[in-house]
Length: 114
Length: 110
Image: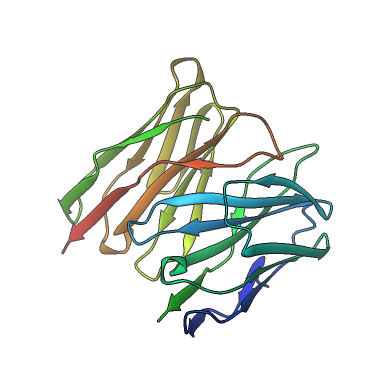
């Protein structure tokens, strides 16, 4: 019974390619997030969606485009991949009304751009 | 946004030892979480603790919201406790980004 799942777990691709990462949560949460963890282990928010609407969009290149088809899914599409995009991408979800507001994270997708 | 400072950055302990990890926030936070990132990279929720004290087995956490800090206690360390411990906070309840600290890397030696 995986609460937050991501696919794929590993993604190795060449510069210039386009790739997608998928995320699904079965916790009944109304908000989903994408975080990026760089090589120094620093975790930073990229996007958040509440009820399929974009709420937070940090200073992320517009090559990154999140899409939320419904409350349980949030996908991340990356165009024209660059070496600096190599990182671990985590999806998370939480409740944002009524509490508790704890965020739960998926297992991560390790993206390597060569 | 808020700044989150964790200390110490690295900690090496013998199995069986106790430890205290600290997290300081630059502003009041309304949501505070502790995570353990294990050697396989998984982020495991340890505590959701906006205020007060909670215990879960050998781990406990205390948040003093008015003084903008939180502490994570690990007692009788085991090798499986190794990994990176992160604290993270939100300025507002819900619908807001978690800002993470830079982590404490804990290594437990058998």
